[in-house]
Image 1 (cartoon, one colour):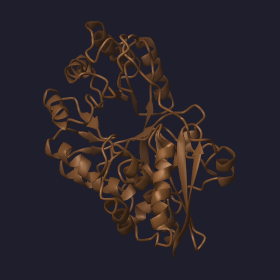
Image 2 (tube, helix red, strand yellow):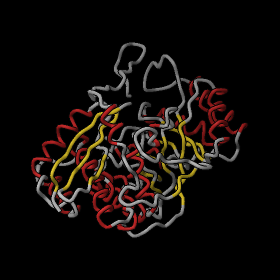
Image 3 (cartoon, helix red, strand yellow):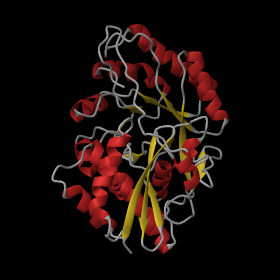
Length: 378
């Protein structure tokens, strides 16, 4: 079997789907994307396509190394994301060729259903608590959100903000004392401000605190971790297993969050999870993207022993569950998705809809600023 074509589709709300065709009629789909840089990643995919067309799609480990090592410059968001989406599509092809789910080729499933966590939002403690309450009523056992603050002056925070964080958690615990609540600081705080946030919310036992600092300096995150008993999570902005090595060696993280659209793809995520297991670190893949990304995550979640929970971005249109794009969208029941049973990624793309909804792929991330006009972390 040979690869014959690779085609990109930009679709709402901000996604990039990749279709790989073969001379035996088997088609695979992946989701190579960097948010706000979809066109750049699509160009990288087409540059790789010039070498991949004519090659055997079943040789996934070989093709991964061919793409990763032959460019001399390694890693980074663009190349790693292009490789990730291509690799997802190759697994989709391989699973269809052998008529089995991807997880069966990666050791077989270790669970029957996959725990999901939903996003929560709220500008006040009352809104924060109401969001937690509503997700709990939908059956979710875990949620994640951040603490809103208007008119941010600096990466340091005020006493009022730390009290606001504690008040939000207290309000949430008052309406649901059992649900797991994770907090995402998004790398927007000075590390010492993050420590104070963690101290303020620690009595309410968060499931984990995500990105208390940006990942450029993993030693700082390790220092934060040593100062608290609250589990620290990060990893969405790390690429390949080599990017995670330092985090494990420094014992910086209790939870790793590789993004399967950025980290190198399905097998690379499985390797990262295996490295994590040796350090007693839990695996919770990052996923703010579309249904192909989710499908790829579920395949790894199904066969990974140290899996914790799977992110679900909770779009009202349910596009991320595949509504409109998949012939059979995913369904969350009592906070879980059943392990997919179909071959490959276990999904069937409605290509007619994808073509109808195709757009320019020019979505850009919002620009954020501090009150003095300084550029802020997004």
